[in-house]
Image (cartoon, rainbow, N blue to C red; front, side, top):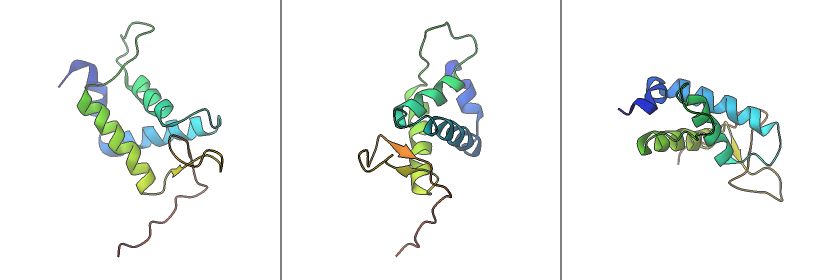
Length: 108
């Protein structure tokens, strides 16, 4: 375990998901300039070690980055987030938070 990733590794999947939903919701309110990369970088920033020098961008080790990506993608799979912001920005990297989580259709 890398010491830099200690805070990320201490979070269970539910806690990481909650943090990511919180960040996505906050940034979605700010408008379409906030895209998937913005959310992922902000989540990483909030998980950064407190002693990180100013101006240094925190990026977890690859395994941690991929965990963030799996969590991010899961928010679209379960309907917590939806692709696109408007009909002019209909897909990723833009997203929006639906009024209520959409119900997933039953598997065939």
